[in-house]
Amino acid sequence: MTPARMLIAAAAAALLVLLVAGLIELAGSSSSGSASLKLTPAQMQAQLAGSPPALAGLHAQASELLPGGLPALRARLARLRGLPVVINKWASWCEPCRAEFGAFQRAALSQGRSVAFVGIDSADTSAADARAFLRSFPVAYPSYFDQSGAAGTAITDSTFTPVTVFYDRRGAQYIHQGPYPSAAKLESDVRRYALDA
Image 1 (cartoon, rainbow, N blue to C red):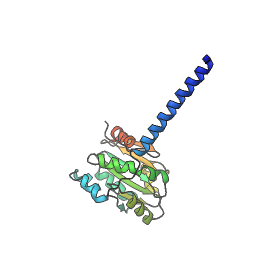
Image 2: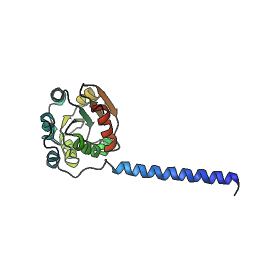
Image 3: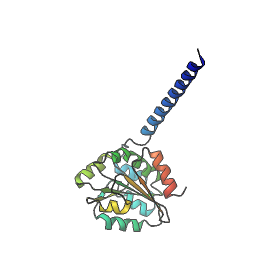
Image 4: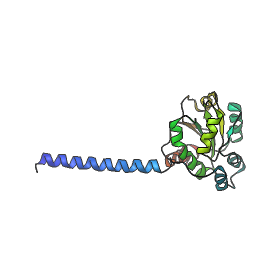
């Protein structure tokens, strides 16, 4: 075999190895956190029993769609001041939101004893559609119904979905645009931006 052919064969083999490694990593990341958990809100509440009172109040409203829009959401955030908070803006019609909801289910269960999770159902035309979505993808925290999208825009500084906002204990804010591909990536950002770890 000539040196040129040996070089081409080696480059092709290296490319094949990189391609296979990338496919394995992609398969692992999509299966590790995006799929919906098969737990009911009551089972999630049971797993989070014994949480501090402000967080237990959120868990007691697991997967509920709350009224009141921006004023109610701001009042809840005021009660959570001093705690790390993660706010996820979603909509039932949003495919990237659906894709990331499994990651939020897992993160809220694994970190819900120390971090407050809250949802904003933003720009959904129907509360019934949002409730059906939450029945399909239950989470251990409530969401605020925001039909006009005003609350979602005010809190996330964005008209897009999904958007996630992190607040640390001091109130410092970090905004993440777009979906989370896995619970591991979301939990890493929770530790980095909400827990200062």
